Image: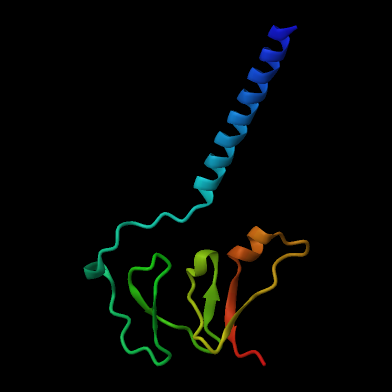
Length: 112
């Protein structure tokens, strides 16, 4: 009787371990992996009429986007709108899921 209980606990522990490992693998695949920051390798963004921010990895300076400019995408790789604007993501296919919406490009618009 005790050996059956112990075997059941071992099976539960193995199942839990497998679930945790699988979850970790999925999360590492979805993560953004940035190289070490080398500010000398960054391009000069030039004059930014709306101000500057940093790139998706938080390293290189880039210009904020203005009205009608492309923005969004995964981790905002297509740019970030200036403070007074919002990135309105373009509609995805019907029944879109959160991952599709996360990856969509958008346009910077002034919202009321």
